[in-house]
Length: 210
Ligand SMILES: N[C@@H](CCC(=O)N[C@@H](CS)C(=O)NCC(=O)O)C(=O)O
Image 1 (tube, helix red, strand yellow):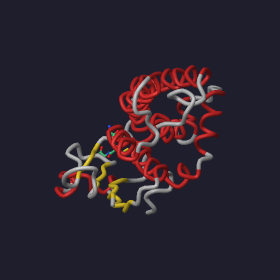
Image 2 (cartoon, helix red, strand yellow; image 1 turned 135 degrees about the vertical axis):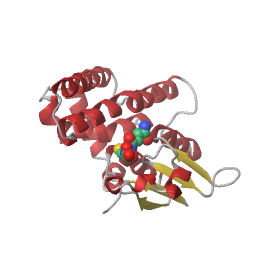
Image 3 (cartoon, helix red, strand yellow; image 1 turned 120 degrees about the horizontal axis):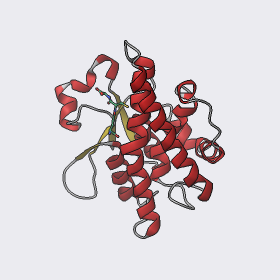
Image 4 (cartoon, rainbow, N blue to C red; image 1 turned 60 degrees about the vertical axis):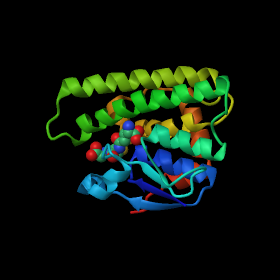
């Protein structure tokens, strides 16, 4: 059984979408980051960076129970455990890892900072909002170019890269849309519709139920 430590945020949803896609049984432990539960000593043993998501797999392929933090590492771990959604070798694997790391190092943090400065910060600091809005839009333009030439981010097949990007790209169309501006990106729109129609994605986006 896998235990998923998560909350109602785009980073958390990457892990729940993946678990739904691969069909592994899992138990959800909500970590309310609004109530600072991410700083509890027990959670730190699983996630030394104080952030969700994290998982514990008590039946790994070998050895003792394994805990994994960082959403990209969780996606890769579950893909390798199940042999799903990440090619074992070759160009499709390289592309899936490129776009997964692109999301973890770029799209997620930039849109996350935009959300903070534009919506949650007590004072509105315009240069910070502009910095993360412009970088967020640049990254969405990069995604648009990729999805203009390929069906999915890693190429012809849906992969962990699409799971990594879905919740944040979806947020760019909803809570961040007014701040980012309404740029037409038909490739991203087509992809959002295709990925969002997957039943596992829909179930994963509802986790945790709180
Ligand atoms: N690089 C991390 C980022 C995770 C992250 O930022 N998680 C946020 C929620 S979306 C969090 O736990 N925030 C709590 C805090 O910053 O104290 C990953 O991809 O897993």
